[in-house]
Image 1 (tube, rainbow, N blue to C red):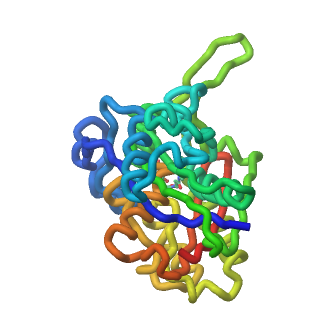
Image 2: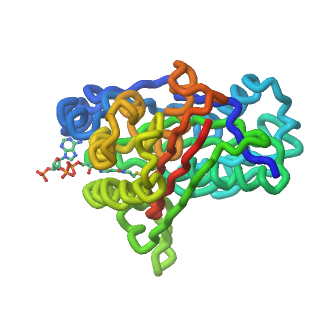
Length: 316
Ligand code: ACO
């Protein structure tokens, strides 16, 4: 049996940066409110690019980094809650654009837990015979935001990031558990709805912020405790979904782990949903904090819409 190993990381942010002060010019908010409540100072917003465009950039960079042809890929998985279309999938658009003629391609819809779910799934594809694939989280959340609603508009950003996963005889994922609780799904909704009178309505993203905050700092913390048991102190870095810097503070406190072990970049990008964790990973690999093949122990924790959450303990 082979196991999936990350052999490269990459990311792409649309060039336009919108600061908190920029938002304060168009809605009743302030840099002080946003930064103190969430840690966010700016976000990237796509102008003439959609989710597939962001993901195609990431896919091309990934292939360059591992010096592979697109025809070497067996699969492409894109985690997104903001696809260009319901069909074709973003993954098929990427596959077509890079001419990955031997790859099967599909999207998964798991909101902010998307990258964690996709990496878990990709590892299982490699365990059953695939040799090499791309796993990318990409979002253009800005197109789903209600720009009149300051309680959500200030929180999110656009971006994409991902990894190459290749077959190895050394397992990378050493422990994992994924969860869903659909009975709490109404706490975070976004997308097309059809009402009983056949009226089709596009609903912007709506979120009960406080409920999601409590879910993250209770249920998700508990799931990390259960996965790690007495191993929490031996984890080198915690790569949590970036929804709010205060959530990271509470995790560190409840797990009794130094706050510096919780990587943070929400100040630059806001919440980019399925892209937050691979963005963190790509930055950490880029600046040498995480060394691929260096045997560090890291945990990836996703949580969000569905509701969904999940943890992967990796020996990278
Ligand atoms: N600027 C200024 N004031 C604001 C803003 C704003 N942008 N937004 C809300 N306020 C006001 C509210 O109107 C409220 O005023 P009131 O007391 O007069 O009614 C006050 O600020 C406090 O609002 P709360 O919502 O109670 O603020 P809270 O401290 O709970 O912070 C936040 C809100 C940041 C959304 C927080 O709840 C949070 O981070 N939740 C988690 C979000 C999350 O984790 N999402 C992840 C999943 S996302 C996904 O899956 C796509």
